[in-house]
Amino acid sequence: MKKLDLFILKSYLGPLFMTFFIAVFILLMQFLWKYIDDLVGKGLEWYIILKLLFFASTTVVPMALPLAILLSSLMTFGNFGEHYELVTMKAAGISLFRIMRPLIFVSVLISVFAFYFSDVILPKANLKFLSLLFDIREKKLAFNLREGVFYNGIDGFVIRVGKKDADGNTIRDVMVYDHTKHMGNVSMTIAEWGRMELSSDKRFLVFRLYNGSNYEERIDLHRNEITRPFQRTRFSEQYQMFDLSGLQLTRTDENLFKKNYEMQNIRQLRFSIDSIGTDLNRQKKIERDNMVNNFVVLSGRDTMTNAFKRKPANNPSSHKNRRFLASSVINSFNPEDRSSIIAAAANTANSVKENASVAGENFAILQKLIYKHQIVYHKKFTFSIACFLLFFIGAPLGAIIRKGGLGMPAIISTLFFILYWIISFIGEKYAAEGVLPVWQGMWIASVILLPIGIFLTRKATNDASLLDVDSWIKFFQKLFRIQTEQGL
Image (cartoon, rainbow, N blue to C red):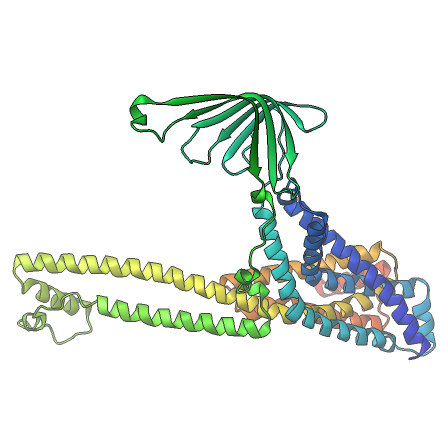
């Protein structure tokens, strides 16, 4: 490897890693703001939080990596132009394409890795992340007993304490409702004071209560609805245990999430698309056969003989003759049969209409599910292609603006990335709703980026002053002069 290539690689890889981790951190902060309410107050262990953040950071790579490539390539060539290194290379007879060649090779490797990541690593990361997030969101809040507030976090009990001492374990004016019998407020314990302790395995909370009473309505006795028996028991000391296992984080079987399209690779997506498509075609055939059978509304009646007692006109294509044929069929029956035939036809028509409406909704659900699978399928390719195309936007754009650092390059790269993201988002939404074919909606952003990259690369190769204000002023003055001459 030549020293020039090594210099260019060192100048590029540093900003690439820096911008990548910055982008991941920013997107990770967005995740925390979104799910902060589901994480706070759950009493989660620190390693569970770290595991969740690690899986979440893995899922944001498809957004962070293209942005990092765009920004780092723009910064690298902007620094080359700002410090006249790019001018020196060109003065030595080295073309811009030759300068970009080692980075093009790196971009190809990154694109290959991006495809591998989206096909192999990302489905597993989505499975780990979404299953862990689901369990955390389903977890109850950690035990937090506050003064004067009824706490119902422990299954089967409602607890209230009037005051907690400074040690955090001594409680006073204690009230405990026992709902384990699922019969309402039939059992209650009141104590003047007590102490809270955890068992050695931290699975049980132990209340050691003093100077209190137990109140219970004896609904288990004979004729309790009439006599309303009531029992009161006083105590000087009593122990009461509460099971805290319901407050622990329980993990759901990950196999329950594996059928989701976000957790599948290319091979699994193809199989799912074929399976859902086969199921959709089978249901359409069943519904079509049922509809054909439901239209036999006059089965069991000799309608054909009565229908042709009167011959219609010779032109069967006219609406008038068809109405005459229908009236001939109906009028050929006596009034009682005629009413039953019309009622049966109306009921059958309504039934067919309702069945068709329900079937249409089911077909739409299955079709949208196919669209979602196809969107994820195409994303695995568009992700890697976007990494390659954004390099051919950032590198020539940096050579044109000739500004390094995180100022101007960050602004320009953010604008381009927002443009790319908006186009991708709109295309994906149109594809999910069936407005556009899935391949068109998912590839429209890449199709738009391709000519932009070619245009910028050509301008940078020809040393065009694309962002020179004076050149644009001269261009518009010349254009205005031409229009004025044509007007004369």
